[in-house]
Length: 82
Image (cartoon, rainbow, N blue to C red):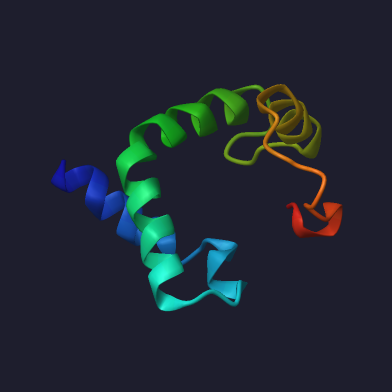
């Protein structure tokens, strides 16, 4: 579990969540959810990236994944997704 936590802390500095104007409590809540599901998220990333241009995920594959999982709702602006 410490390895996963270390990976999460390392990766966190590269996430775009830093750009969002969130309250400290909101950021903490997001961090807790990401930590809880980090191993699943990493697995999903590896699957998507392996079908793209590893280590990147192509926009086509990302779009398919987002659509398949119904991640985007009607209030989400498309320019906020990348």
